[in-house]
Image 1 (spheres, rainbow, N blue to C red):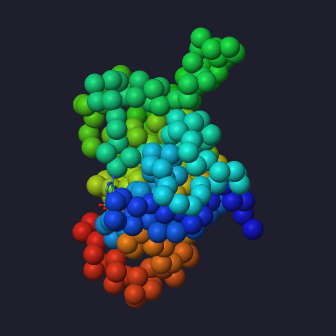
Image 2: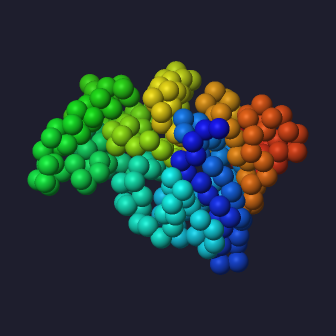
Image 3: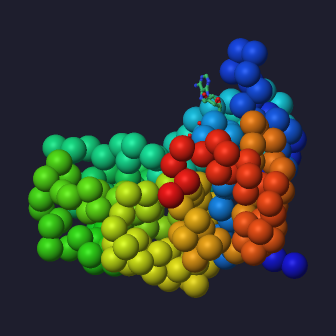
Length: 251
Ligand SMILES: Nc1ncnc2c1ncn2[C@@H]1O[C@H](COP(=O)(O)OP(=O)(O)OP(=O)(O)O)[C@@H](O)[C@H]1O
């Protein structure tokens, strides 16, 4: 039995009268890639926001290594080793590629803090490694605004890589990528999981889902309807009908 790093239990979120997430249980196991799937509005991004402290749950719990992190601020949760990407990337468009990665790092690594100098140098090395791994070294001094769409997706990934976090929550990280970039992206994620990173990703693309996910949690209208290996979930006619019946971006 794998080691459970992050769990959600009875997690619920209401927005006024709308039950966006309804009593969801899920475990993220070490080194396992879990995809959150389901039609638009199923509650996937809301679950991410609840896990990262960007939203406060209406009920239920989020446990990191068995301890509740409910009520903690997003920056504290990030420091605890949960990194997250957003659908809209949230890059600093007029800063350089390198600086976009640097600012994503933990505050403990600033060089003026006690013992921070060595950590700072280590972090700088980490930034260069992340740029190299994502193929961005040659454009490290370019402004983010001058990157191509695919390059911005890799930059978003470089920011996560550089943090050294062991749990990654990725919101449609490969959406809109051409086949070549998508394969390169998938390979980087595979390398990371081989090194012990645990990934939970929101994904609409069935190819990406089948290539990456070890497990799929399927949601609809805030409820988790199933969780299993991709083969089982993607062959369930009821789930597929829900998915293709409602999804506007199931490409
Ligand atoms: N801040 C908010 N205020 C009010 N309603 C919200 C808010 N955030 C999300 N919702 C609603 O909650 C429901 C779940 O939204 P959520 O974004 O989590 O779905 P999703 O599965 O991520 O969808 P998509 O695949 O389209 O990104 C939707 O009906 C959405 O309109």
